[in-house]
Image (cartoon, rainbow, N blue to C red; front, side, top):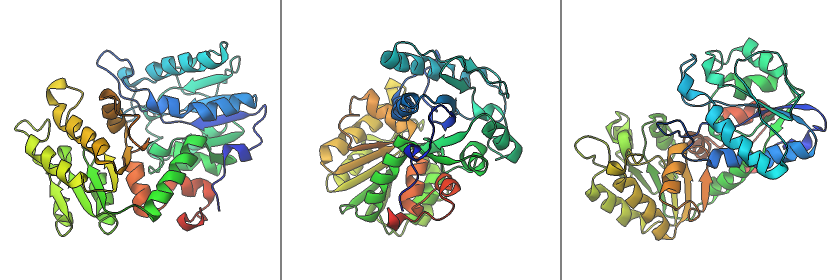
Length: 350
């Protein structure tokens, strides 16, 4: 059974609530460092516009903890989106709705609601919040694969109130990762970095799937590491201030990746945004490309690192989600998939 596509919905002239993933990295001055996640939403937006649908985009940025945090406004992402859409149509303007509410503004083709996580009910999966969002539209489309391992109102709550389907980027993610999960070329190297601890829990479920698990970044300090000790694994060493892996660790990882046929990478090796601490991540990124293995990289920071080093065109597939990618590889589904496919979705049926 294939997942329902936006093309399966009769959206012509209707209002569509589109969940995107605009959790993009921002510079200290508030501009978007990497636009990849915004570009990923364009095919679905373009299709909806071709159907003369009115689009209400909902998304989040960062972790404001249910409070309004001005430097986590979606406005920088909306500014980029406005330019991208204008490049295509020459006409459409995208206004930002500053406060969540039921008031609809459809003088334009597209509106964007402010950061969903400014409201604590989003992460709490509040039923009334989901219902309020759903009341804005006739259909719901999830094109936020990277967020779909989260049981949040905009991911699993809204489909209870609206006919729903998936956007094109979401479907492409599932297609590629399904094939990777079922028939990876061996040996498989799972490369983990960053700071999000849930990656270790997913790694435990992938022990029998991966031939090597390499752990760098702040994850090396996680107390869940011992659970991986019976597997082929290397835990990297950090430099004294913990901002990067050591060059010795980078060399050890490089030697192993040179033997790989498949490399799955989630999370940078250090604080690569600072040029003083980019060397570990840069060396690893170059090693992934040089290995000749089928390479898949996922997560916002990983995307940003690959783009910074000019290697984004040399990675075979870039997944929008780090944690979501690992969750899908580990479990074959996601809460966001089950919410729309009514628990009937099975990985082997794709």
